[in-house]
Amino acid sequence: MPNGPTHDFITIVSAAAIAPLVLNSALPDNNPTNSIVLLGSYLASGLLFSPDLDLRSAPYRRWRMLRFVWLPYQKLVPHRSWISHSFFFGPLLRVLYFTIVMSALTFLILAIINALVPIDPTGTFLSTAAQVRAWIETHPWVIAYSAAGFVLGGASHTLVDSIWSWLKRKLRFRLPF
Image 1 (cartoon, one colour):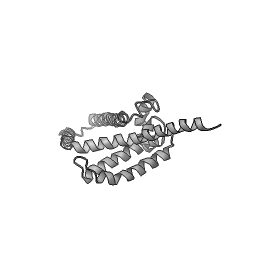
Image 2 (image 1 turned 45 degrees about the vertical axis):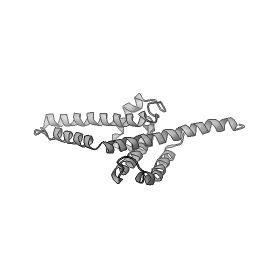
Image 3 (image 1 turned 60 degrees about the vertical axis):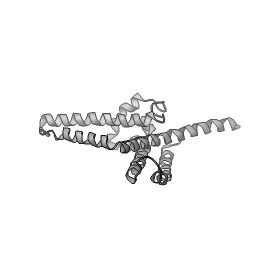
Image 4 (image 1 turned 90 degrees about the horizontal axis):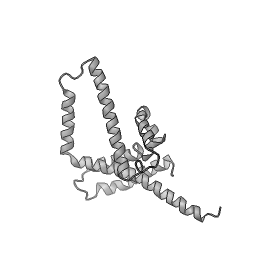
């Protein structure tokens, strides 16, 4: 497999290469904001939500103080399994996993703080959550572009791993030693 710096290089270079294509494409509801969302989620997927989060890899270390969030993922998902290295399912699973874990931690921390000192007696938190939900419902293309960027960023990693493995198998049979 290519090492971490190689994957990072490929992610950054491929994002730079596709940026003009995305900005000038005829994608539905394409505008600079949606293009930036797609490219940003592509980079986040490749650099932070990499399929190699199932190892103690460079993307894992990039999470610094939050890397503990990925420990259960590392225990549950075997390296290079269909779960982590699938083209579509892997990136979306990692985003869903992260969202669920961080939401649970946030609610737990807020519940503990609220039990000690009521911090939201007016229901501002629930009101804000409703506003976020309404924004998501009124901006489906932003969500679609974000999901596409995450899938493409994870797929580029898996594609490079697959090509690298194929090349190693082909070259190994042709080497005389």
